Image (cartoon, helix red, strand yellow):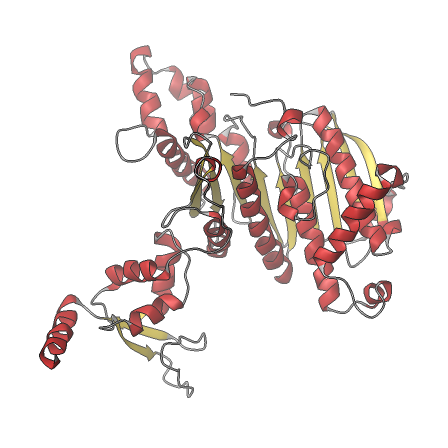
Length: 482
């Protein structure tokens, strides 16, 4: 099902669009930092990139750009802070005795672009064969099928890269190539400076026609799929981007899933040959079964998304999945953001990002209706009530002895809608009566002693939780004292 024309889509913004991009930005910041600090190459693919900006403005805030520019800015931000932290001499020479904070640098760049306009961008030299001599750390791939959006995105990336590098005095390290690949137009940017080892490739084609680039050794890949209105990206294409070294973040248009049996089969990875033998009278039941549509407390869109998660897990082996529900101005579900990964650290980072933007306790959800119609301000930040999380932990482990602290972490991260904080254990240990009644270090050779209500990383802590009888005894003793 098609949305508005792409060029119209990028003229404005919505609260849910901003939330989506904040989640993406925060996760990207964690993802880039983790992969780069682990000595890995970082690959980011945006399958439905768009024009890069909303309207004609050049914002200071990263999340106010389109998704491809968010990826580019996050990558440059990380590399800039690495240079700043290591006190790279040329960077300090540029700004006398101190280098600027990112927001200051970004503010200067935005003002420069607005004042000088795009006429300041010179013809960029071609890269030639020298690109093979440099080992890179970051690879960005942006795919956009709409010709107008593709042209705008190329101009946006070109302008930003040139001004950014000019601010640092290294604009002569920006190289540019234009050509074709498998019949579609491509534009490639390379930064040849050793402290900004990044390349960016933009392709004018459909995502389904784009072949994933070969992954370099020791690399990790994140693919973002945000088709803003198209609900039938085939499973066969999606599964190419989920493996032990790759993860996917999808805008799943759960309320627009096409009823056509062929579309359902492609979307959920069901062989069409199996669908063609289904008797006509059984097709409605087939749709209900695949889309998981049934009566109950969940909306059909949520059931549809949960079914999609199970199919992705089955076809790709992805171990973890998180879902964030987006509702529109009428408070009806319009899509779900779904993240798939094989790695626990990926789950934790995405959960932190989703938790930051949720408007509801105990679930990942936001609604334009609450913001636009009810006037409830969108608060960005971790709003979870740790006392509620502590109650959930206690119900899970009540009466159990010698529980490794890692089991509590796993329960919160993998089996609850919350993020793990050590404060949760402190709440249980300091409650009246206490529900966490013993904390013992399994490492008997460790000489350090923990302070009460703390759980240092150097210890292998075993936890004992009170049971109901214990609470009854303590309550009885208190009553006698009164």
